[in-house]
Length: 159
Image (cartoon, rainbow, N blue to C red; front, side, top):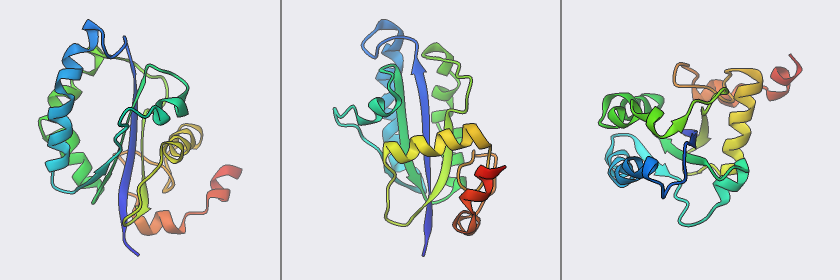
């Protein structure tokens, strides 16, 4: 079975999306989403489509959620830090508050499957509680799909 890299990242807005504070962020959303979709290794991204499911999962109307699936960790890394996305990423303090906990998590999903906001929340919470493992990790890790498949979740929770 083949696996792909899923990711979630969340951010807490400084103001509502329709505020002056968020205008430049909102004005760049379509362009950056299109850039992601055209990037090498991109497979899928979660689109809320006026569905507040993701926001309700975090019970905070100021939390914005981004979830996507990529061919590999390198593909996601290249989009995040080596494309025009990096210019918007550098400006994040203009629109989002600093988060005390990890706000981004990666994990592997079987080819053709896509994560739900609830599953993504579980992975992010796990990363914050137990640290990096093949179950949930950051772009700094080099866990493989095989390690994720073989990882025993119960072992980590007992530590």
